Amino acid sequence: MQPSTLEQHTVKLQCILPLSKILTDFAEPVFYDIYIHFKSSDGVSSLWAVPVLNLNLQYNGKFVNLGNNMNDWYLTRRLFLVDALSGREGTNQPKVIRVATKLNISIRLAPNTHKGLIYPPLVTVFYSEILVENPDVQMVPISFSVEYGMKQGEDEIQSDIALGVLGGLAILYSLIKTASWKRRVGSPLIDLQTILKFLLFYAGDLGNVFFIVTVGMGLYWLIFFKAQQFVSVLLPLPEQEKTFSTYIGCAFVLKAIHFVHKILTQLSIDIFFIDWERPRGKLLKTVEGGEEVKNVPVPVSIWRTYFVANEWNELQTLRKINPVFQIIAVLFFLEVVGFSNLALMDSSSALNRDKESYKAPYNIFLRYGVSAAMWLVIALLQVIFFTVFYERFMEDKVRQFVDLCSMSNISVLIFSHRCFGYYIHGRSVHGHTDTNMEQMNLNLKREAENLCGQRGLLPNTDTQTFEVSVTNKMRQQYDRIHDPLTRRTGPTRLIDTSPGPFEQSTKAYHTMNKFLGSFIDHAHRDMDYIVRDKLLLEKIIGIEFLEPLDKSIFYNDDSYSFTGVLYYGNEATLLTFDTLFFCIVDLASQNFVLAAVLTFLQQKFFQLIRCILGRKNLVSKTLVDERFLI
Image 1 (cartoon, rainbow, N blue to C red):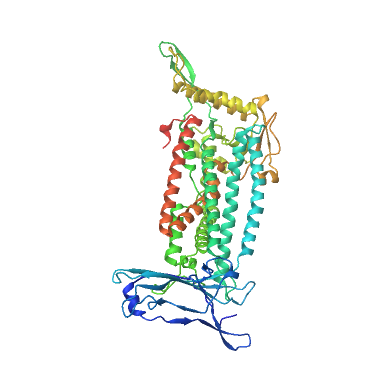
Image 2 (cartoon, one colour; image 1 turned 30 degrees about the vertical axis):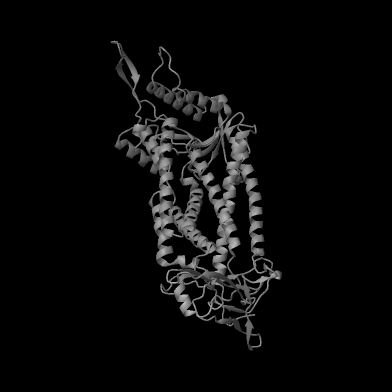
């Protein structure tokens, strides 16, 4: 049948009535027969009797209407709200009354309809027997609801297919990531650590699958339910809402594991600042404990290294979005503009509602779709503005850092894995940068007028950033220089004649600087390297086809892939985790403001942890004194 007008307004009302009022207003039972008025296809007006499902109905001593099998139901046409007559003895007050404490009208949409065709509504009623003792004190809870629904089997199958297909692709992608990780750490064996890494990679990829599917489902119901002119789509039933909540919970847990894994990986990188500056001249120095005077090289200033280290430390938590603006903008559009009203379980798409009119409850599909879409859209607009306008016309801190390295005559070598990392070539084309202001300005002028060489690692090139895949021998030499510092906390000897921690750090710094400088200059024939471009397929799947056996490989990298060890290069992971955190808190509390505040606190907490531990790792790996990191 097709009603003349059909607007979906899911209604859920609850109230508590005094028993004395019920006895006064319903002294005699009133029986109701419910009909629905509709027009047939030829325009003739008709009435259709609405069936009633009485949950208290007994047949042969059994409650026949409590089961889910519709074939066993006994439907009636008549109902009453209050029966205060059956329990009355004489003219006295009744001892027991029957009250319809739960009344539900269920409307089901016909399948494959585009004109709002529905099945006859079903009224479900449940009667409670109230023992009359003190009517002035006793209270009776009453609930009334109108629910709309449709068969959701097809949608469930489609969502399950999407999860199955994308989950299978996630397994393949995780296997590729694991193979890439094995090659980059230089370990051919499949051990327990390899299995653990695969599970961590799969957790992140599977979390992305659940996130994509849940956001897609939320947007599907939001768009097609709110935009329909004739009723053809109704919201899922409570059973589907439970499944959807489980999907969201899985996405959040898996993404949280991936997020923590990313942070721990960033906090364990190896990094060193290679200073190319060389002494200029010599000076006379008296040997300590004697009168002998020697000519020693003029010390090279360490301030340039400290300056570059400070800039790197500030880059560690740089993001492509402003978290404070993100929170304020999301709350503004949801609460002030009124986008939160799109999550109500009615067919209206109006953003502004009358405060005095009935307000339908929120639906989990619509609320999740609105909140996730709002968070993602605002974040995406921020990323576009940041990358297209701000970095191009205001400041690009990543590019500025690379320029700073060149002006400071400092190169940066980063190992994100044991045998894989990134290299920023900062060797100055002017030979020396530890100079005065006049000479520095002159150097900049010569470079602007192309009166000197280019900054690239190779002659006549500008490429300064590389992905590096080093041999096991080169990495062993790196560890041989750095490891003694990590073991200096062991047991002390009775007579310790070794230099102190400060002397060890200074010696190790100069040794490492000399070794890495000579490695870049091709001074070690047994630890040489080549420079090449990465294949397109290698860039797409994130794995290097060539294994560095005899020579290390430097891959040209114009996309600044070294930001992968910073917040900056993991904006997608951060954004996904923030979105899920915001939505999870909102769905649990039904409060956008609380969700925004807790999301902001969560961001600040992990940012603080990342700053503190990242700073300690920077001090440990670069041998830079922590007191100079401000």
